[in-house]
Amino acid sequence: MPDEKKIPACKECREKKLRCVFERVDCCHRCARLGKQCQLPEAKRRERKARLRGRVEHLESSYSEILTLLRRNVQAEGSPAPSSSQYQPSSITDRRPQDTGSTSQLGGSQSIFPAVVGTEMLPLEECDSLITAYRRMSQTNYPFVILPESCRAASLIEERPMLAQAIFIVASWRNSARQATLRASFLRDLSDKFLMQSERSLDLLQGLIVYFGWCHFYTITFRSEGYRLATILVTMAIELGITQKPLSVTQHDLLLNSSSIYPQTNEATSSRFWSYEARRAFIAAHVVSTFCCLAFRRHSLLPHTQYVEDCASSLASDPQCPSDSTLIYWVKNMALAELVLMTFDSGSRERICELNDDKIQLLVKVLVRQLDEWRATLPPPTSVNGHLHRAYHCSRAYIHEVGLYGLVQGQTPSVTRISIIYECFSASMKDLSDILELSLDEMSEWGVMDWRQLNLAVMLCTKSSIILDSTYYGGVESSQRASWLAKCLETLCHRAKALHEMAMAGAGASPGHQEKDHFLKRIANEWSNVKIYHQNCVQRNQPQPQPQEQAQVTMHPGHQSQPQPQPPSLQQGLLQSSDFPFDVDAFNDMYWFGLGDGEASSTFTTGWQM
Image 1: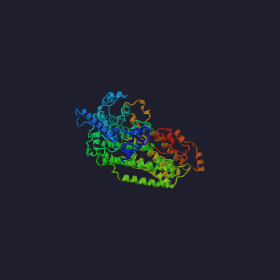
Image 2: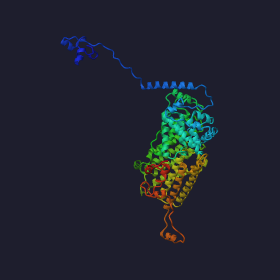
Image 3: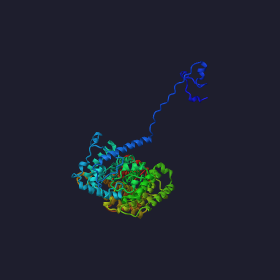
Image 4: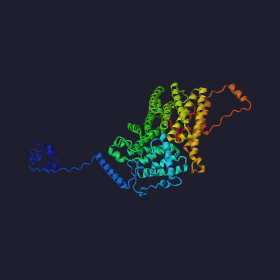
């Protein structure tokens, strides 16, 4: 008997909605019992819908169409062919409007940058000197967008207008009027291309990297503007795909092109990495993300991965310029700083309550050992890697910063905690000593990360000194420490004011331009207030004279004992605070203004910012 599942129900059973069981091949049981003719329906082939292509197949098809369009565009623009000396970008998925009318159609505005180039404000012959100045600034302080000596201003402006604008903005820090005009053009073009036209290109990414690197020249509220720029920068790097390995050699060659401002060596035959410029941009996005993670005490937008370390190692093994060999040390130093942040959770109360002083000291020793191992791998100090050797002491102070967390009102720190605080003061003092050996010209080329790290060192050194003096007054040692720190802050204030005057006294500056708010002006005022505050704390912690000595002083003719007047911010800072153990919070009014841009909400946070 054949399998009943393979025989369809007859017409009679189907109409009655009954089970159809066949006794014979030609008649079912019910029809045979009722004497009816058993009619079987005609067997029809079931029409099945065509299967949709898999997601991978669909993406491959779309990708092939995109590559076909790219080849057509390259062939259409290939006549006449550019000379070998021209600057050709290695653009990644460069989506730009092909006609000038597309800008107006999308609601954007025409860029004013082409109209500025060649005028009295920005002569074309001066553009080459600005590029030379940028090369000098980026070589040691921010080696993520490198321009070779063969790159000229005309080709850079034509092929990468956003990068050219960012470079001219940074290098024009002595000309505030030109810098303001170029900055307005850059931000307008960035808004049109990134938001209105959804352009994603290496030109935009490199322009953002350069613009962020020296944003202290033209941003006041770094807490909001800096983090916003970093978010856009990291987002663009992720959307371009350079944060992941290339999928194939074809994708690597067609999307990145083999032509670049640098001659390509062995990367064209490798599918493991992107181009040199793309790898530097990826490392820059990672460094900026980690720096903002430390500065704002937030989660990293682009955390450390093995691939970013592999990219840095590949640049070190086959460098195009001397700075390529230093990027691996940047990546490892940022990875260690990120580990410190995750270990102590920015000094959160929950994390500090879980750790006693012995556990904190054990963790600090492990982190310091890793930092010492990193320092041992550094090459001898040169003009290219001098920044990395100075970063050692700042990183050491940052590791010991945990000693300043979790102190309770009226509680005397333990000997273990005091040793951690003293190491924090010692490391930050050495960092400041190394910086004081630099010239004013060297500091004028600093990027925003250098100034933020210096500001952190100043705050850690000052607060550690106040806590040490409040715990025990060491007599000569405390006096020497206070005297050295006062001279150090005085020198740094003088340099910051001098650089501010140089930035505001450029060509085209208005008479009242010096009065405008500026990062260097603000930080100089903050350091001056910190110096006065520290001196007041040192005087308060000195041993008070005996009553007989006080009587002799009051009986001295012509002597009037009057309290030294203090600024309102310092008088307000003398109030007691539950976050500071010695009746005074040194930075509730000053520190957060300079680094948190005056936001009141930041004054109640426990973690420090850079």
